[in-house]
Length: 468
Ligand code: GLC
Image (tube, rainbow, N blue to C red):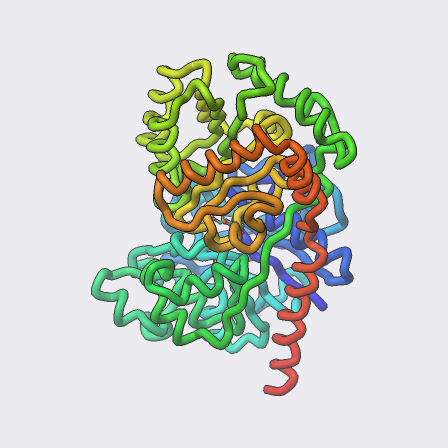
């Protein structure tokens, strides 16, 4: 089985969000399970090669905006597996920020497949999110025989661009199936085209795959999703067990495993309290948040309200996240008033993230929607119990009262009530909390099972092609 994994971010070369982690961990597992998987992404200026020598594979030209553009394919590989990574260089279009970046990138991938520039023919082209959403359409339009799978990591980001992009790509408007709708706004929607034209589509958790059929979670695409319903399924992400491991994590001061978790976490908590300038005490619960500051998704409003309302003498909050400046300011303001109990760090700091996973007692994940979410799984592997909203992948990865805590309604009051219940148990029933910590740490979030499910989808696609 040969799979080209098409994506726009890949850890550790270039990362923006959770997709970058998935792009590293899933191909690694697929490779271990015998799939010949190769990853492709743009070679941005900001991409870090980590001292790897890049190998020149091919130079070719594509016509974009009526002009010939030179593109170079280089090859590097994963740092910890023999997986080829192709990076595409073009000074003018393949850089961020540019509104043409993804249309140009999609066209390049199409040209590569059409002309076999990699001298390697995949069975399946596995596209990730809207950044790669036009590839299934281009493949169909060009009558290429590749099968396509589109994975939706986040329906809220759809990649809407002005229609002139379609012209620049040399595509006819009529090729885009629902362009009528979008033409009113003179826009093309990459994710929508991907959902319509891909042979199969999956979302990153079974619950999210169901939620997106509804108006509430469908982000305006629910009608289309219901129409294409028979080809949509859900596969829960995993986490990379090699790098997310409290036994070996070099970013934490006291490594620990399941057997030494209680002591290890106590030492890491003390370290974190000192580092943040908080009172050092075992008796005050230390509660973390790690995530992109994206108010539509991440529940920043209910978290802010809840923190403002509770008696802060009784809690310590550490919040790590960057994004919307308005929300960064709101949390900075809060932290400036309550220095001993609220700490806000706006610079993404991998080391501190690990220290929070290891040292906090609980992790808040109050998302309005969450396609999968990786932080709750990482937290659980580090024995930090998540307090999360029962939605999407959070619902699929946490069992309330067993290995974490779930609240249903999107409200600061429900979040507060659940958090206080969790803290009550933490204060008065150490035996139960310790059991929960062990259960969470032992839970299997490795990619083995999910990678097998992806292979099933690839096989389904290949069997389809034999029939047709
Ligand atoms: C997006 C989603 C997140 C998911 C990640 C990886 O960032 O918001 O829920 O875990 O993609 O699939």
